[in-house]
Amino acid sequence: MSEDICVIAEKKALLSVDEAQARLFAALIPLTQTETIPLKQAIGRVLASDVPSPISLPFARNSAMDGYAFSSTGLSPQTPFTLKCVGSVFAGTPFTHALQQGECVRIFTGAVVPDDADSVVMQEQVRVTGQTIHFPADVAFGKHIRQIGEDVRTGDVLCSARKTLSAIDLGLLAAGGIEFVDVIRKLNVAYFSTGDELIGLGLALSTGKVYDSNRYSLHGLLQNPNYTVFDGGVIADDRALLKHTLQKAAEQFDVIITTGGASVGEADYIHAVLTECGEVNFWKIAMKPGKPLAFGKLGNCYFFGLPGNPVAVTTTFDIFLKPALHYLFTGANTRKPLLFSAICTTPLTKSRGRREFQRGILTQTLSGELEVATAGLQGSHVLSSASAANCYIILNEDTTGVACGEVVTVLLFNPLHSA
Image: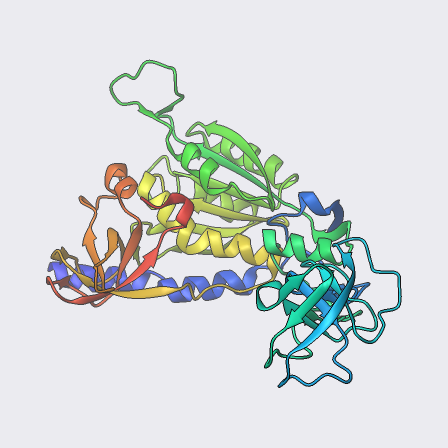
């Protein structure tokens, strides 16, 4: 059988990336359970419901700058005028006296504007002689005052349900006097490596053994304030042990992630155990790296069986698990990531049949054009080029290669993991 016929046969047996993503999101049900936490602990958490403002923002009229506040009644903006300064108003200390005609007050940014004043003129525009303030012609009346509710009115929604709270959101909620927020509870995630060849750090390496790097990659990828994460260690290539371990974990966690054992080798038991104890939604994906990706359920627990090769682990996590986990606690389907077009500055090789996510280095020229180059060797075991990269170069199934100067599609890594 020719190589092209083999590729076509394999392509028919595999699920496309788009089809797998569609099946994945169709099977997921977002969390609904909530918890109440202090605002300071809410960074990165997801709101369970709309948060209405109990007050207006600003709560009172206040000055937008340092200057002088006065009433423009009886004054002409085309004619210079003088006013007597009868006091100073600082932020937090309102002016308690009535402001008479012909009077003004020195006012500072954020200070409450007296009820009788309708204008603030910045200090740079006036001349001061003792308590007499000289205003020039052509000053603007009715300016530089922040009105009550200009930003938010009482009852307006400060932040909406299922919003992931940013630092600015925390500031907005605090400005509204919100001390506690209801958020979606954390997602409980367990992860395991599988394989007799794996040993832990600190042990002497011998022929046939490799250090377990996948759990360290997953530990980093799962750093999220919406997850409670458990490192389950390494499960040996023992079908009964694997079955027992996964069944026990499924009783405690929302999501289980394994690496290794999802292929078709004699010691690869993930698919068989998942079929026996739960349900398999899909198994093989037409992508590279990451073809042997299993997804299904063990009871009420979602299961992701990732490949064993380390670059395939991070790639399948980025393309499938990251948006899936995000959907579980936000309810927001993010299957369409932000993609960029860039000029490829190095030739790329590829076989027809699978969508490839090659590791690249994205840069920007002085003129603003985006350029991307290969990060090096593209084997699914080559961590060094993945470490050097800051993006994926996405090559579709029918692509057979890219020449220098061609435009390609690029997906940036998470900035926290960029080169």
